[in-house]
Length: 359
Image (cartoon, rainbow, N blue to C red):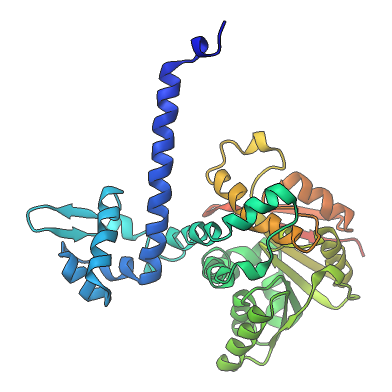
């Protein structure tokens, strides 16, 4: 039987419809990022129907661009439109997921990754042909976006929800311990803890000089003397029994040598120390991720950022979709004898690995 004769026309048409939907949703994602960065969603929140002139004036933006953006938002089902008054309105039910006031539920923050990743498509295509990777320097907005994302996924629930996954750690922080964050980025997590626990000392390591410099400047401006940030290549990370708590927030899979970093973390913990690592929830097996709520997003951000920045350094290219099975295997190989995997009801995107080792 010829291949054409065996085609299911209904299935073919359904797939075409799906692809058109993907194209439209991709376009909407770009415009949602614009709406977040320009403050349009924040400006429109809580208001009644307004004309494009009024929307632009309230946001302090150019009306012609705002009008075209509103066209995308209306046809994309984000903003309501009243033809009679020619007015636009952001429903309260939508602003609950799109404004800075809605944080940590502001999905527009994460959507910023889409246009950022699109900027490196040409370089990624070359990597498909020739191997290698795309360096961090090709992502000029990465640390800014990641800091916003971290504020929502880590900082907002750090003290109340994440730290309690490690029994007794809040009490130890109150008394005073030494804490290290590996892959600290802009340092928002350590800055938050430094304010909350003045008796403890906090350090952040990151490969990016810009991120570290910015974090130290923020600490100085806030008058925090118990926190510091250091540019450090974690490939050669080796310290002996120096910290009581080490954290890694969404940073293990990006490393050039994640296995080496994990071994370094294990060696750097004092007796009774804890390693608390947040990383992407999911399986190491692609078939187990098919029903994951954001699985396509995870594999995409992995291919276009997490995996490739590691490969650019000649690294392992582990990727964001490395999964729980491989994570547990690598943590055991690093020397951790106890690993508990925690989950939080409000956070479907992450696992929290609480790791310790025998004395």
